[in-house]
Image (cartoon, rainbow, N blue to C red; front, side, top):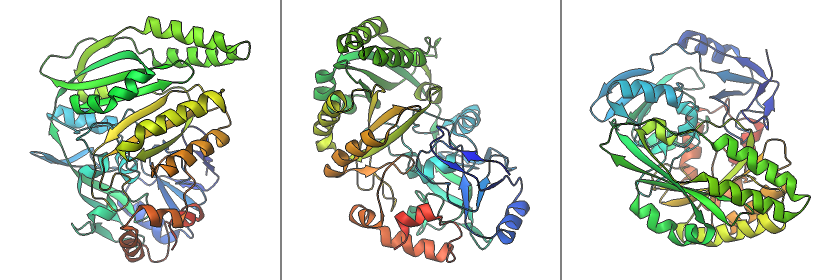
Length: 418
């Protein structure tokens, strides 16, 4: 038994942590355990998905091949393997994920269950690529998910059972050309929709108190991979943290330091394997809230969030991330009947985020936003009923697969219990 904590440390649990390595061990755990069980992946969610249960099931030691089967355009894989492990394994067979987010250490099951996403006007979230799955129900029954139930399983927050295998769409392995550059706030806001239309993948980060941001585009290329540039993200965050501390001497000092940093940033242009180029390492701890917005509301929301940061929350210095994702049909997907523009706000792991996130969430909610399931939000059952027209279908599926609420923790019940 040991204390479980998520990546940032904002969620902890003293529930017993068990790590079965085989199907027999997992079935025995289900039949012998009492109370609520919560499956976890890599712990990269900020929402209370794993806490307030009686046992935590950690499945990263589960003995199963990374890639179980492969055919043209489709793969069957270990649901609890990490995205970077799957990417390397698929790449060795000439296949790849269609798209990935900017972090690839999550488990595939965790990423899909929370609708984790990358960016791209025509590219859906990772969960939308699920074409089939095998899960273990609360009663210990091994189930091959039917086509009728698939939209409920694609984004399910670990409430329906334990995902063991996932079948998903793949594409032939490809290289991406990554270009990075500094632009003014006004340029980024005025050109964002044009840039999403022009590039396969496009995103940008607004840097508080600087009047500028950094844009990143990725486009398919036949060019061979080159030597990647130095990863200066961690250094840039340290400079922004220092600049924020200097703000207490005078706000102009912060702006001056940020201006110098951005002047030294320069333009970046290199080519690499898609999965290596899309994802980055995140060493500095932070907490995060992200909402997915109707595209026509994004500019106004970003202007409000920027003003909020610079006036009421001047100690916020972490970049604001902006992406776009295509729509899908999963019952609990934030991108159901999309597309949606995603706006993510962050605070350093050592800062109190409650006031800033509360004020941001009010802006997001007014604009019709839906929260990222793996990130912080305050939604309750009544809120979901307004946002998700197929919530009743999910309720019925959950009642069928988990009639005794073995996977429904008190934290999850506040959100999902009718």
